[in-house]
Image (tube, rainbow, N blue to C red; front, side, top):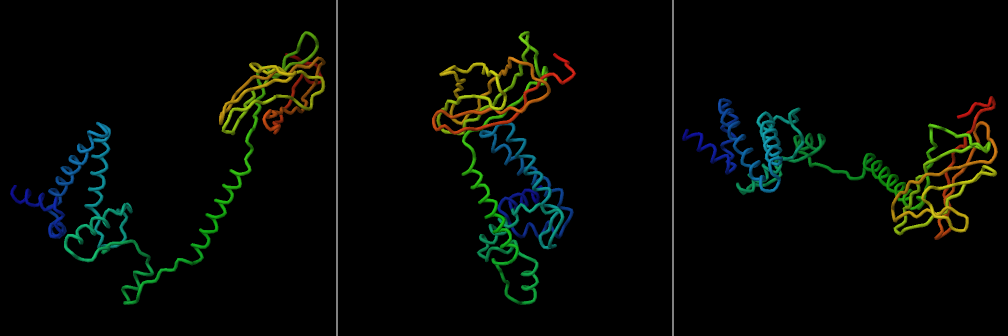
Length: 276
């Protein structure tokens, strides 16, 4: 028991010789697992005041997983499938080397070419300008330029149209046809805008926008800053329309007269005269 307490204290102080003992004597693995478990409990409950029970559970799982993985990986063996590339071994090594007053960076990331060069007694080389870095730079610049161009040229307003599917159309007692749509008006400006909603492409049709104000014979819809508003639109014709006719919904910004459009279709019974 005295030996275990002594090893536990040395582990808390990051004693280098303790690690050498563990490597030389595999029978000490059980004691190492106990130490890892105790440290995981301490690290987990240390976060209880900040994160509660969830933090305790996550802390225990994280610490146990990291400690268990590290027990099976020896950095001196070179690349290992058990390594998760966390870089904690680099920090731990630098901490111990600093306490021993020795040069740090004993463990570091490097390329296979430089490793072979050092083994052969040659200086390591680092070329920042090479085909791969040039290719990555070109791709980053191209993607960044595309994102900036898309952001700079995006339309400040847009409209989407969804045609009712059931029923697609309704025959009126006056002999005309009625279609219903859902309009989604997007205002990307930083201030509220007013839009006049109209239709193009269907002669003699009337448009009614549910919830819109009527000003000077136009349907006016108010949309808040950087918001989307959904409204119902009903189009009716005084005469019967057969088949499908193209139609365009247009919204005009009353502040700058910019116009956004969206195409759809106005549907009626087919030539055989079926109806709904």
